[in-house]
Structure formats: structure tokens, C-alpha cells
Length: 136
Image (cartoon, rainbow, N blue to C red; front, side, top):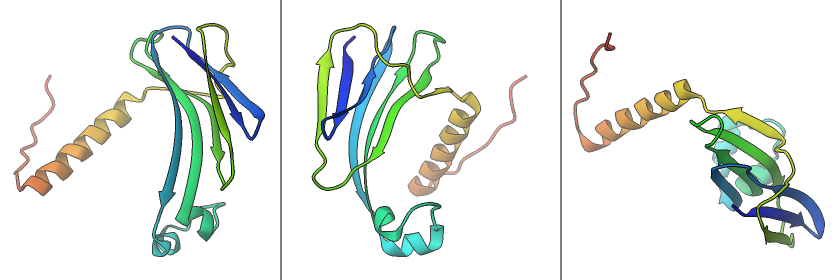
């Protein structure tokens, strides 16, 4: 698997890579939100302007080799501004920086998300959801 060397404004940011199976991602996103949401949510440490127009660079991945059910990895998360230059160098497999955060998969949270999705989808489709007890 390739590794990614990431630079932001000519400064090295990280060298991300996996030693086994999984997925490696570099995501550049820009989100525009309505200002009235800021007043309702009041996000900590975030100005109204930053909330309304958020641009970020995220470097992460999902390791599926060890443990086999998946571990989320994070190398970098940076806010972006107009004029920023991002360089991604695709490198051969090999040594890379260790991730700055490692989050094991949370099966209870996954199940909660699935239940929430099914409930919303049933309401949207006009279906009746019949819940059954747990199997023994």
C-alpha cells in the first residue's frame, strides 16, 4: 500500500501509512453553514465566521489487519484558509509517522447509529417499525 507525505504551505505535516490492510485517506473539505445554527449550537472555541465557513484537511485511515474489525487512525487535522497550498506525495510502502490518535472501533456506537438510521428511514418511507426483543 502507498504512503502519503503531506505538506501544508511548504511545511511537512505528516507521513501517513499503514503496515497492513486497510484504507488511508486525505480529505480536503469546505462546509458552509447557516449563521442561525451558530446561535443555537454555540460551538466552543469557534467564531461565527469559522463556523459558517469551515475548511479542513484531515489525514486518517482505517486499519483492518490488527485487530481485524478495524481501528480508526488520525495523523492530522488542520483548519484551512484561502491561499493555503496542500501537497500530497504518493510514496511506496514503508516506514511512516505513527498516528497522533488511535480509536478502536466502537461496536455499541456502530449499532446505535444503525438503529437511528433504520428508525429515520422507516419514518421517511412511512413504514411501521416492529421492534422485537433480544435473542437469547
